[in-house]
Image 1 (tube, rainbow, N blue to C red):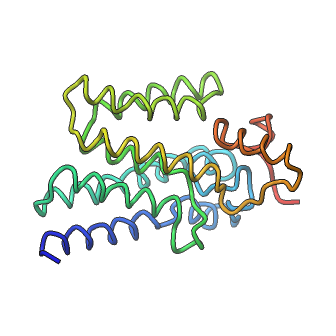
Image 2 (image 1 turned 90 degrees about the horizontal axis):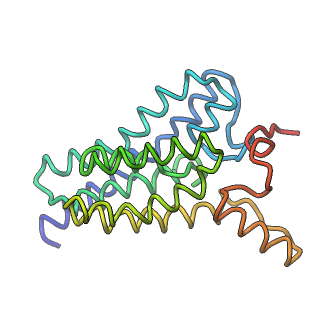
Image 3 (image 1 turned 180 degrees about the vertical axis):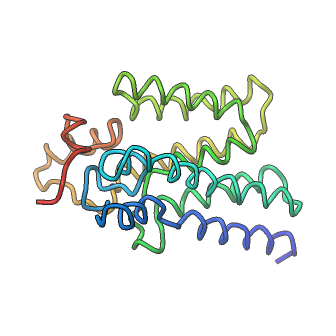
Length: 222
């Protein structure tokens, strides 16, 4: 391996480990004494911090999660890696966030660290994603709109003459998002075939196992 390849590999591992820091889980443990994996959607995410820990706690958790994606990208560029390499390093932080080694690969959805990648490499794309997410939250259709936004982001990057790295990494983020929704942190699918396909559809497009969103995110342990 060349020294450049070793550097990229090292940065990728570092990014994954940084991404694996379970910020939302720690907030739940330290502030409320709860395991977020047992609440709501079961994701270790800012949205579950908002629902079950405290609305104010979302802001420090969210900022740290964005930095988990931004820091590896910025460091990669600082040490001389190309924008393409830095973008893929940032995506390793997303993988760490979604499948953290410190929580037996039970993580979040990766949107916050992906925002960190955009913050460094494509701020216009970050603004676009935030606007779309805001609309989704107001209309309670954020899950499908996130898929649409990720699909449109490469086109927006091309139109604004953004980095080609963003175009590729956006498709990568779309694939990771779909995979994580379907995997659902090891949550088993129903045995009945009809119910199973219904849940698969709901997971992929609505990011939940039932139709009622509020009932889903507000679940508590029995």
